[in-house]
Amino acid sequence: MNTLLQNLVTLPPELMREHIMPYIRYKQPNDLCEDIRSYVECRNYLINLYIERYQFLGENNTEWLEWLDNDIQRFMNEDITQMLWFSTKCIDRYKRLYILSNKSDLSVIDNLWHNYIRNNSLNSVLINLGILNPDEREDLVIFVHILQNQLGT
Picture 1 (spheres, rainbow, N blue to C red):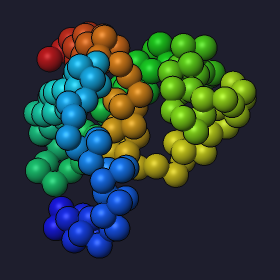
Picture 2: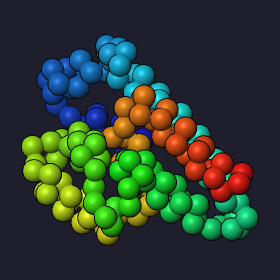
Picture 3: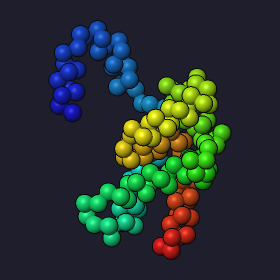
Picture 4: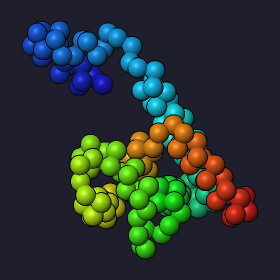
C-alpha cells in the first residue's frame, strides 16, 4: 500500500485531478458495491468452509483449495465434467471477462483449457468467483452445501 501511495505522489497533478480523483471522491454505484460485498463474503465463507472440511489433511496442506476449485468449476459448468464439454451457460459466464467478451465459443474454450493448465487453484477460485454475479454466488453456496451433504458432512 505504501508503494501505491508513493507512486501516486509522483503523478502529475492534472492527471490526479482529471482522471483519478473523480473515482475516489464519489460513492460507487450500489450494484457494484453489492457485487464486491457478495464476492468478499462468498470467498471468505467458502475458503473457511473448505479449510474446516479438509482440516484432517494437515495444517499446511492446501489440497482443500484444489477441492474448492474443482467444486466451483463443476458449478460453473452446470455439474458437467469439463473433460466432456463446456455448457453454453459456462461459456457465457466466461464471456463476461472483457478479454473474452467478443470471442467465439471455441476461442473461449481454448482459453479456458490454456488457463486451467497454467493457473494455480487459488487464481482459478478467485477469478471464477469474480465472474459470478451475487445471485449466482448464492446458488454456488447452495450447490456446495449439496455436495458437502453428499459426502456425509
